Length: 85
Figure 1 (tube, rainbow, N blue to C red):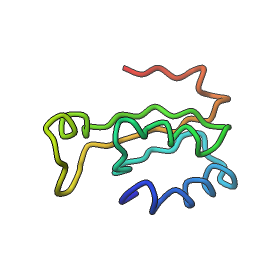
Figure 2 (cartoon, rainbow, N blue to C red):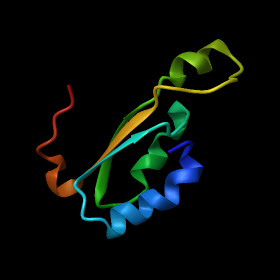
Figure 3 (cartoon, rainbow, N blue to C red):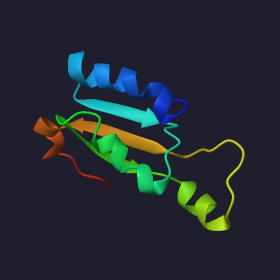
Figure 4 (cartoon, helix red, strand yellow):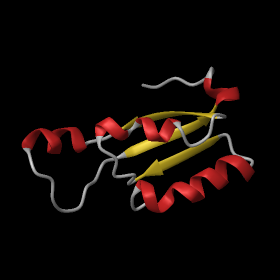
């Protein structure tokens, strides 16, 4: 995504007009307190996400390129069959 704000409109379109069940996202660059934004993209999808920014936030001022932020959007119709390991 190269950041949530740069990719949000594409994700909204993909969820609305795409015939997809699962969408994998990397590099959303969201802080742990903002991960809820991924659940607000489309009501037909639930989001499973994590952010490695937790460790960086605890250390203080953030700088440089972030990495390790991933999320999976799953259509609610199939989310009941989803297991996270």
